[in-house]
Structures are given as C-alpha cells and as structure tokens.
Amino acid sequence: MTELEQPYVLDYDYNSTNDSYNFNITSFDLDSNTLSCAAQPLGPSAVIFLCVLHIAIFLLAVPGNLLVGLVIGFSQQSLTPSDVFLFHLTLADGLLALTLPFWAAATLHGWIFGDLLCKILKLVMEASFYTSILFLVCISVDRYLVIVRPAKSRKGRRRACRWWACTFIWALGGALSLPALFNDAFTPPDGGPTRCNERFDFGSATHWRLATRGLRHILGFLLPLVIMVACYSITVARLLQTSGFQKHRAMRVIIAVVFAFLLCWTPFHMTVMADTLMRARLVRFDCAERNRVDLALQVTHSLALVHSFVNPVLYAFVGEKFRGNMGALVRKSRGPERGSSSRFSRSTSQTSEGNGLL
Image 1 (cartoon, helix red, strand yellow):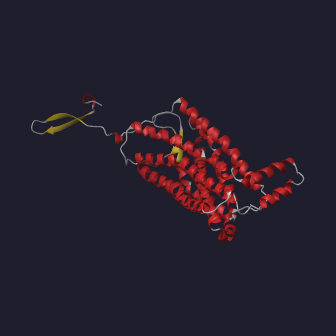
Image 2 (image 1 turned 180 degrees about the vertical axis):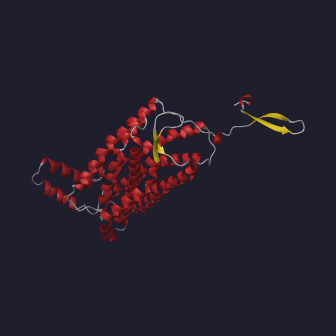
Image 3 (image 1 turned 135 degrees about the vertical axis):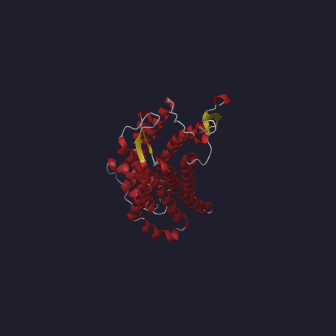
C-alpha cells in the first residue's frame, strides 16, 4: 500500500478562544497481525482430490479393519494382550473410517447434516483418534514385555488381557474427546457453504483453543510418541543382540510402525501448532500465510487419516500368525478339509504365545 493509499483518520481540537474547531487529517499504518483474513475457498481440483482421498481411505480402511477384527474374533487360540489391543484398535480405526463419507460430502457441498450430527461425528472422530493411539501404546508396551522381559511377561500379560483394561481406555478416550462438543454447524459471516467446526465464546476463544489443542498435542501425540519410541528402541536393541530370521523380521515391522506413525501424524500436529500460534496472535502473519496454513490443515489431516488403514497392514498382514489364522478362517468358511485343521493347530500352537502379532 502506497502513501497515497493509506487510510486517514479525521481528528479535531476545540478552540475555546474563538469558539472554533481545528481539523487535522492524520494517517495511520495498518497492522496485518490484527487483520481478519477472509477464508479462501478451495479450487475445484483440490476439492475433488480431497473428496476422492476420503472415499479411498474409507474403502480401504473399513474392509481391512473388518477383516482383522473377524480373524481375531474367530481365532481358535487364546488371545494374547496384543491380540486384544489390536482388536480394539481395529474398532477405533473402523469407527473413524465410517465418518469419512460425511466429510467427503461436506467437502463438495458444505455441511448439510445439521448441528447434532456435526457434534456426534466430531465426538466419534476424536474418541477414535485418542483410543487408537492409546491402543498403539499398549501394543508397544506389550511387545517390550514379550521380547525384553519374557520371563516376567506371562503372568502380567494375563492380567493385562482383561477386558476391563480396554474398557478403561475407551472411557478415557471418550472423556478426552468431550471438547468436540464445542463444534457447531454454522455459516461463516462472509458467506459461503455451511461448516462444521469448533466455535468458542469470543471472550475466551483463545484460552479454550490453547487448552484443547494442548491436550491433543500432549496426550494425543507427544506422550504416546515418547512411550512408543522408548519401548521400541529398547526392543530393537535387544533384537540386535539375537539371531534368527523371525527376530530380525520383527525388528523391521517395529521400525515400520514407528515410521508410519511419524509420517502420518507429525505434519498434522506441526500444522495445528502453527495455526494455534496464529489464532492466539503469538506470531505475526499476513493473510497469505493464514490461507496457506488453512490449506495445509486440510491436506495434513487427510494424511493423518491414512493411518487408519495402515495399521491393519503393519500389525496384521505382515504377521505369520495372522496369515495363518486368516487361512484357517477361509478354509473353515469353505468347509472342513481332512487333515488341514490338525496341521494348522500344530503349527499355530508353537507360535501362539511367543510371536504374537509379529
């Protein structure tokens, strides 16, 4: 903005001597840090891409998690704690995937499902987000106990396998997701399609946003990441001291688990942190930067959703025990075959407790 384009303020002083007003015209500079930036709509190609991506994740995540749940649920063996945690992990990821068609439709036409469904679906998404990460942590701890402390793991694993432990995780995930009730269906002041987003009271918006997002960053990413990295680092160090194909294969799966978690969730959390700093006016920004962060939030959130169908691949489809159980389930659905059941029971009984998911 040039000097001639600067806004002006009309100022005046009253002169009591001659009963007159002295008018002065002064200019002021706009502070871009205090400007309200109008949201820029996505282009047609970006809208189509996000919509197709959500549908693709839905089509991959729902059958994948359903298959893992069926294989674990119909298993003829006694379930290990990792099996139980994986079963509940598939439930969490499956619930998250079931909400994706609604968000795909909202990308095309705006939010058309009303305020109540906006709150419910956001609550389901947040609860699934927290519980899936908590079950990932439980699996990492269980893998640590099995490989690093095998002598002490059997009795402790039997206690940890109780279903009330999973019930507690679901209750904790539900409690942590309650801030999702701040979401409303509303039409932006500048017009445009209806949105389903968080809305706080104007006077306390910054404090509520910092509190809820801080909770998500700490309990939903940083703390679980520290626990997973610590458990898997010790586990990998122990595996490097042993020999055998199965042990080294387990190490590759563990590295893939941590890498997938970082790849899917780190960009989203970094972008949300940048968005929080801008909304709290803790950093200076212009409208172009504000719009770039808004776009990055949508892209990185979609990337984080990919993790919902990566989990079945990493924890199940690469595991010999899972493939054996899946083969047995397929053969059972086709009818009994002579000798197949006994061969399967002998092969799986040798590895049911020791190998777990890996």
